[in-house]
Image (tube, rainbow, N blue to C red; front, side, top):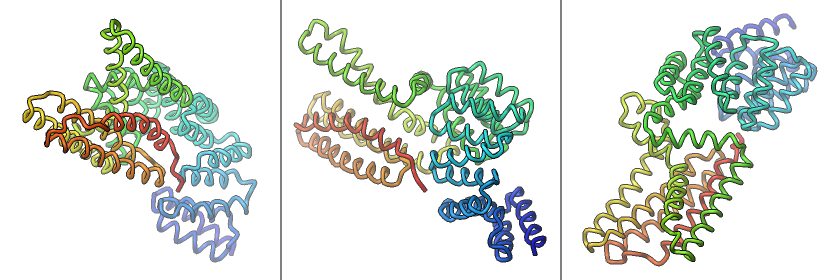
Length: 424
């Protein structure tokens, strides 16, 4: 019977390598019917079941069963790490992969997964170290070379990233990941046309490659000077680390408040301070709206329109609607009453509403997304309460500043919601 069980497990593994997971799952269940304590059968079943995002808890149970039955088998810990990663439980995934590496340190795939997990935590120095360790055991490992390229690029070592990407392409010219990492290296050096070619080839090899899809969107948008300048600036800021970015954001906001107060007390300096304040306002607004605004323009691009997900399309549509309604009401009010001020108030109200609209589309956690939707609904009501009365002579509602302060505070709260990880 043991031989029959092993034959079923081996056949299932072969089917998994051919991406025929449903058939593999049937064979593994047959094997477990004969031997309920076969560790590898539970482990491979976890991978098969884990292909369905709605069954990740079942996959976790199978993976944990495999670890329980074979605690000295590094592969069982590795598969458990993969399942935890799918559930976005990065800390638990790291614990599992560390155990796998302790049992079998010479496996490059283990180190590659560890690097990938560190990358998800934005710990790029650790990701680079993990990739380097894996490449010591297998210099051609695809995952490790991809993680190494991305880590070098995120750490600002763009020349090294380009060299690594080119080496990966020489080793694996038909690898979608090699072309993706090369595209990102080109993108960060400002070679947007070359980046587009690399991402296009990566998507030709694997249309489901999310790394290439996201890169291609950025490469197409980067043909615009404003997007390119803002993107490079935000990339440099992100390299400071999450904690330092928060300190910078709060510091800039406090600094602008102090400058504004100083300009009111010393009007003679206002002409010098106001451009700084306007520059900060533009930067803060664009940091939120840059991506959905330019995604909206991609809808008219012959290739770009096929890249956007349904969520990205909805975000761009709603922002276009908010800005369109704001400009229509503002322009109508300005024409009716001969004042330009209503147009400015309506435009700012529409821009601020767009910030609230963006948040739920960027949240991973379901509860965070729900909070974002509720808050966006409340800001929509405030937006209408401010703009609609303009058509009837109320050109500057009393609570306009309350609306403005509320959206500024929500800028920080919304960022916190976005950073909440989704657990599946």
